[in-house]
Length: 447
Image (cartoon, rainbow, N blue to C red; front, side):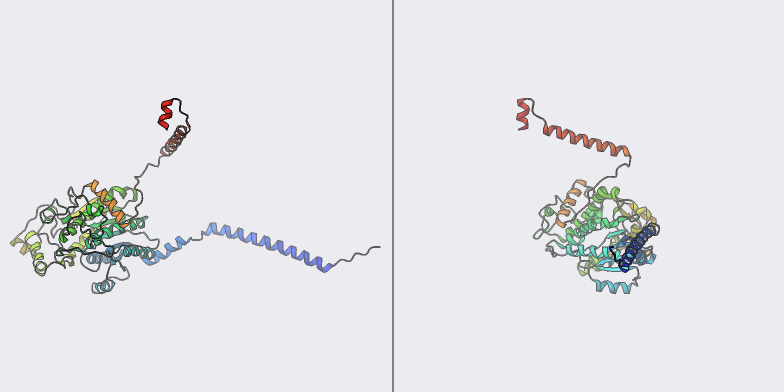
């Protein structure tokens, strides 16, 4: 008889191991099934959604406006008006943060809604760093407004000063760096409601008026010879001519106004961004004229206020730029905004009775409803030169712009016909490439 010895404990352990493994398998499977159903029902937030939650906590329902040059003059006054509404978070792009901190304290800026950020417009590197810092700061929150305000005026210089990029200072600070910023910030406006880019222009760049065409030197880009040469030292002017400080400033304002029109033509319908320029009036006592001679700084505001009527105080000019930022009427693109249309009245001794409140185009006075769409000169409206200016400026700054496309109808027929046309074109090209010549003449033409 054969005796079989069975190890009962070993068999039992094997059975228990198998049962445990099966139980674990079914438990894990069940758990993943439950988690999958819960994820579909609960919708676990993505990183982008979490970022939006933090953005809403940081900004609330406030919209974001970037203004260059908020430590003085027009930029400072505009920021003050925006902050008083409690509806905006203003990013003040400025070169001197210490000065900005002092100004913000003196003017009692609401620092919960004001963020100063360093920007040196005399450096393309600084421009790019500012944009990266802004992106990190605002995260997924879209940019609602960008105001190209900062500028430098060097009318008394008899020689050109250059930036770290070897470009004449007024050209880079007033125009080229703002041009680069527009290209970098335009994608950040995606998703914004009623986005706007605003260029602070000047009557001096618009030569169809006395202020622009009747005061030497007159803005004139000629054929952009200086930009064609790359705008690098020793190039002194946009037109390639000898340096003239006053004309260099006026030329940059002309460029900004032309840029506004070109961006409108290329990108308004595609992006929904309203591109416009403004002339808030002559800020005769602003820091813009700090490089003029002392006698000029003393008497020029008096002359503009009581004789010409072109004077506008900084506080009033700030209200005007503020209006273009917030007024629903100013969502219109391709416009050059000005105030107080019509002939000026109340000159001479009559102006003394009203403290210089002379009514008329460009001067002080008027209210919210005195805004109007001003005419632009032939130079500003020269679209052929504007396109050339755009291309040369892109090359100099390294600006990368999206392909300009016009909106298309969503009609399915267009999609089908377009696809069929493309297919037939490819078929014809293939047949031409593989066809054998039937005659000697065809063979010679193919050779």
